[in-house]
Image (tube, rainbow, N blue to C red):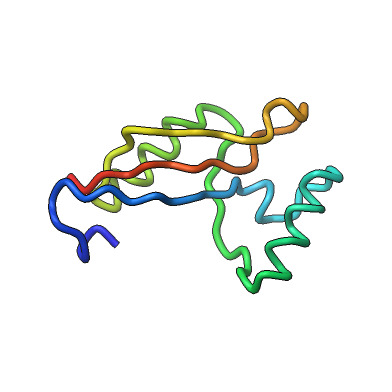
Length: 92
């Protein structure tokens, strides 16, 4: 994606955790996974968010030629591993 963007471009992306994409079993996760299946967006990839979530996302984006100015995560208040985040990524 970075290769298609001019320097300074801002891209909104969403990421799911490995636990979510591999089939974590809380009711909230099952509900969300059912929704993604109905929209035709198969889950083929997840990022390990079990420890330092922001660092994991930053590392992944850096490998892709992007940096992370903004990060919002979901799931934490449900008492489960955060399973989803929305990021604002910027082309380096």
